[in-house]
Length: 204
Image (cartoon, helix red, strand yellow):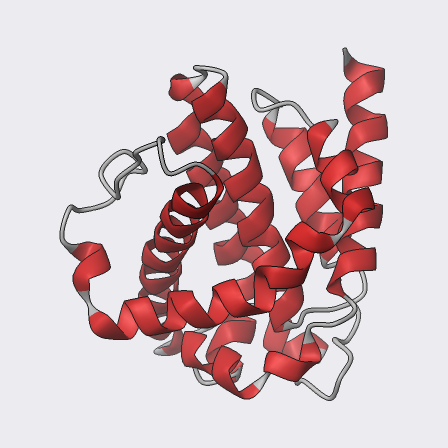
């Protein structure tokens, strides 16, 4: 994987994953990432359609996991980074071409495209946003059986490709130091969703 831009540390050694004692740290980061992902999805669903009710349990989590003030604070930061994603008309259109019940390889194709030339917090949020949009569509189209599957795909990608990088940034709290570094994400995500849309049409 290529180096991330904007000065964030993403050399090849760091992106190979943790070894030794770092495995434990990365396990904690993955656990925290799962809670943050579920919190992100719940907050975005609430904003987009207050009539929809989804809980941490619905997404495979524990009922009390979203009550931690620290978790809420980091989720809030990730939501701030994501604000521009919903303002990109091209991105919204491209997202709409990806079906809620897409196959895992389609999801992974999109995810890999987002991080094709490096990692930064904006792209991490774009991954969260991809999972959110697919789950939102699943909720509105009654494809409830795929919701936890989408969560598991996102977490698998985080474990294999992102957790070591997050550790190098000092954990998920590193997003607080990087709010100005996300601005290239919209075009990157748009390209990724275009790739997925084309791939999806070929496999239908």
